[in-house]
Image (cartoon, rainbow, N blue to C red; front, side):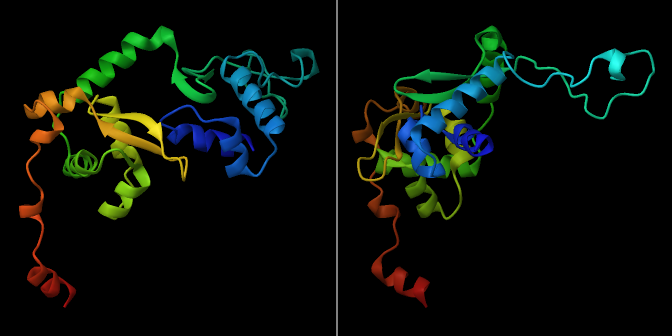
Length: 206
């Protein structure tokens, strides 16, 4: 179950509730909580792998002697941590690396957006608030990575969940308006003239 929880945590754009983990994994809530607490302790270096044998039992040191086949790396603190916040669980980079992460994100944000990012941003701008799954359906490709990039660059934000599905909904930010020189979303150009007419749709279907 640990790998399943980690897979969900890696793509989560907002804290994931225990009940949601339980739903997708098919495990009871108490087991999910126990597994998350174990992962948290593992990432913090509180628990983890320790050598199964001491040096005198034949475990390796740095003296050239062969290592025990049961010896495994000692626990270590990861560069990320698992936090329980806002009623859910989410992975964050550690605070001691905040400046490094900021420098990385800011440097990346100075580059131009890819065509995929621009298309995704346009879909969100006109349909917001909208889920990643709907954007993916419209574009015909998975947009998880693109959405994460746009969130990191401050152009999109996750602000609520869809009641029917529980999916996180995304919308544009004030920075988006600033970059486009708009005062509000009402100033977005009318998309209707850019859409194909009914006669063109007939041609496409043929």
